Amino acid sequence: MFTRLKATFRYFNGAVPFRLGPALITTAVLGILLVIPCPEGLTPKAWGLVAIFLTTIVAIILKVMPIGVMAMMAIVIVSLSQVTSDSSKGAIADALSSFDSPLIWLIVVAIFISHGLKKTGLGSRIGLMFISLLGRRTIGIGYGLAVCELVLAPFTPSNTARGGGIVHPIMRSIAAAFDSDPDKGTEGKVGTYLALVNYHANPVTSAMFLTATAPNPLVVDYIAKATNQSLNLSWTAWALCMLLPGLACLLVMPLVIYLLSPPQLKVTPNAVEYARSELARMGPLAPKEKVMLGTFGLLLLLWANVPAMLLGPAFTLDPTVVAFLGLFVLIITGTIDWNDVLSEKSAWDTLVWFGALVMMAEQLNKLGVITWFSEAMKDAIVASGMGRLSIAATLVLAFVFSHYLFASTTAHISAMLLAFLSVGAQLIPAGYVAPFMLMMAAGSSIMMTLTHYATGTSPIIFGSGFVTLGNWWRVGFVMCMVELLIFATIGGLWWKALGYW
Image 1 (cartoon, helix red, strand yellow):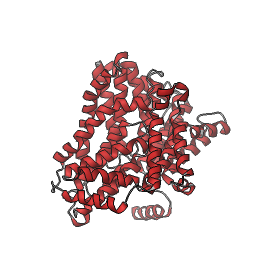
Image 2 (cartoon, rainbow, N blue to C red):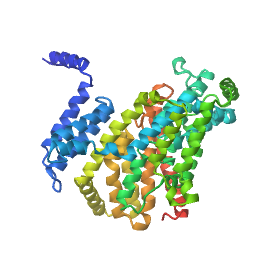
Image 3 (cartoon, rainbow, N blue to C red):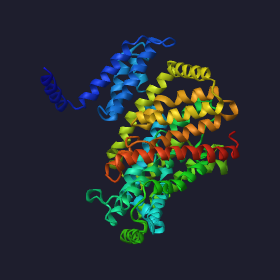
Image 4 (cartoon, helix red, strand yellow):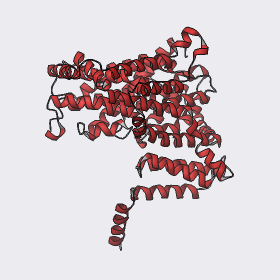
């Protein structure tokens, strides 16, 4: 009997376009949640939406199907179950409500813009320039990769595109130049160290700019909601707040990794020669690279709100308007074309799954679920008798390390951040709410350091074979703690100097 069941499972597992085992687990989770009595304080429809939301998160974590398909599943179930409305027409309107959000289109359009970095070769040129300047030692190459990440971060809201699509190929080329190859068992020469630096620069730079990773605008939105709009971070305010602690993390990170996972080759003069030869082969800046560079400069000025600072508030532009302007400039100049936009699958995929997750998070808030959860968490913390510092530390650490359960920063932020922020806003004295909010904002990126599935960049770099699983998790945990400590100390003092508390 067991043999027949096993054979049947294997047959269907190969026949269906999804992972059957995780799909069965996900279905069981949904069934269990639906039969659990509705908790006191929630309506049956609100609890139904909670069940759908948690099931979607479980499906994403277990990778039943691509995340876009899981998001579409959520849209279908929300519409059919009518948990947000009394009619299917109202339910489908709710399910599609987030797709007109400027926040989502900012992310999507910026991914289109970042495509130009790869197409024109400007991304590779920037990386090679830093290697040619800093690459005489392995640790210098590490700093070159980190600086490359920093320069690209304001313009690439897909941290996966930046760390995995632009910087990682440069890192692999440098490792290959020193015959550091996992297939040959020589990854320890320089490759392991450079791969770890390549990865750990990514979460730090993601924390430094509003446009450096997809969920950051959502973090800003949640902070504004949790503080009743008293702390509404602009692009410039975010960058200024994260500047000093972020730079401190980038300064320390290559050194810490050098101690945790030292390269076998310490001196690498050939790296400079390699970078210079590649730059010579590329020749001078091509016209399209110049347009790309000029467009980046324009975007940076407008995202930083410089015209409004010089000419008055009438010249303030919404960040999404700026992103569309940059995309239009690239298209009309021929730097990228409409086929590039249509073929950028990651952008359209992000539109679907990010839109669905944002929709469910917004509907949970409208149905009172976030308020209910926040009150329950607040009551538990009050009953424990914690002081304000303990409350803040507990909330930050609980949020960050719960990322071990998530394979998507957006899913994690959508599921949990608003509740944690709301609890902190209620329990922490008003004068200390702002630094707590900024720590949570930083933590929402720092948590990417933890695992090999933490964000889209991690499986790309881990999959290249330079770093073992144990080493990845060990370095990830240490770097997470180091970076949280830097933001809590240097960041805390910096935010006080800026007048946030």
